[in-house]
Length: 78
Image (cartoon, one colour):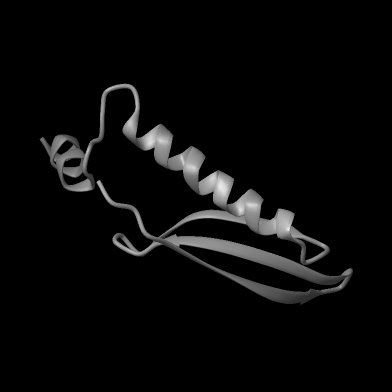
C-alpha cells in the first residue's frame, strides 16, 4: 500500500503570542493524520507531526488488520 503525505505549517495569533501548527495530511483519504503545536517554528515541530502520522497509521493497520471505513460502517449498521 502506497502512502503519500503532505505537510504545512501555519501560525495562529493568541493572547499569549504566536502558536505554530504543523499538519500532516494523507493525500489519498485527505484526512489530517498528524499534527503538532509549538511556541517556536523548529524542525522538531514537523518531526513531531510526522511521528504522530506514522504512529496513527501503525495503529490502524495492526492487530486485527486494516478495516476500511466502508466495512467498519457496514458492521455498525448491521
